[in-house]
Length: 523
Image (cartoon, rainbow, N blue to C red; front, side, top):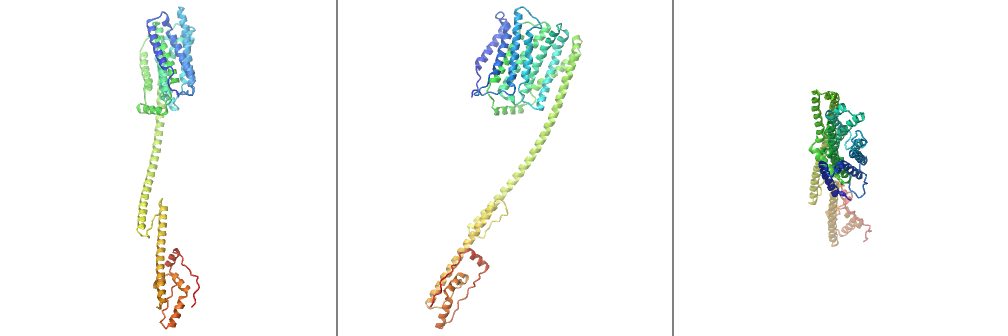
């Protein structure tokens, strides 16, 4: 996406060259009557640049700040006001070339159109404040405007109102121009106050705001000085006063150009600028300028009160009323500031309370997590000990866990230990049974060799052997053989058929005994 300013270098170098040439032409009256068209040239250039910048559509491939709300309409109104002032200047230059200087004249139509158009355009600029913050900004602007009007009334407006010999329209215009100049200067204060918000941290809006503020200051200063000199009868055409109009209008045009074509500012940069501004200062030059004007007003009022001039006596009621209104606005501003601070204190207290609750919850969670980790560590050590004892042959070792996340693992370990114990018992039982069968086989072999049949004692512990002897009917055969040979009868002790409960449990988990179904052999 494109982010460079089109024609930036030719535009700025060309503007600088025009400003230098215009200065020399006006101050040294170069080029015959050419220097008299400096104001008209500046008005046409500034107004045209403003309108072209405001009405140029933003393409999809441009990486620039978008228009917000009625911002584009606001810059269009500013451009129209500048061109209307140039229209009035062209008519006035026609009068000058015709050696006429009527007042009022048709030129005043264009001159008088600039302040309302520019004022409307400035009011339509996007506001970054909301609620109580916007109200405080408006109060600061009204304080600055009231102070400027009161100071202007003392310096010029009062004299024009009571000492002017013009007709009603002439008196009205004589008061209208310096009054609108003061209003434009108060708009500069409004712009400075508004520029502290988030929207105006973007480079395009911030730079254009500074440029239009400087342009309005130059324009209003030249216009105000012109009115003061005109009232005193000391104005001379072609002085430094005449440079403020074209320079101010061209600066406003450059401000519109910068607003339209400066690249987009990313959100991270805006957040960093806001943080730096909050960390740096909360009572900046904009607020300080408002109270500087108030201080000047409080100096002007005693000068008027102690003066004995008739004009000063005549303007005193208006000056006193304006001072009272301004002081009332200051008091209202302080009241709203106190209310705002109180609200901020309540919010801070609520935030601290929520933070304390959050910290308590975090501490409780940390305690539970620590307890859980300790329980896990203790349980793991216990399970490791049980596992080690099982590995060392202690099959009676069991995990004793009453709960927790390791309980299923402990139960599984105990189940494994039970299975190992049953497996070992089954192996022991099988080995004992194998030994009993071997000894029984040896006894049978002895019997076949003619020796008496003696049932091994170990066979009494295994019902399987008794079942085997019963199946072979060995008891009867042995008795018959012994009686026929006259040898003493050694009866085979009977093995109890019902095992003990412990042996029954072992038998239930051991290999089931084999039941012989073979019929007894006959002699």
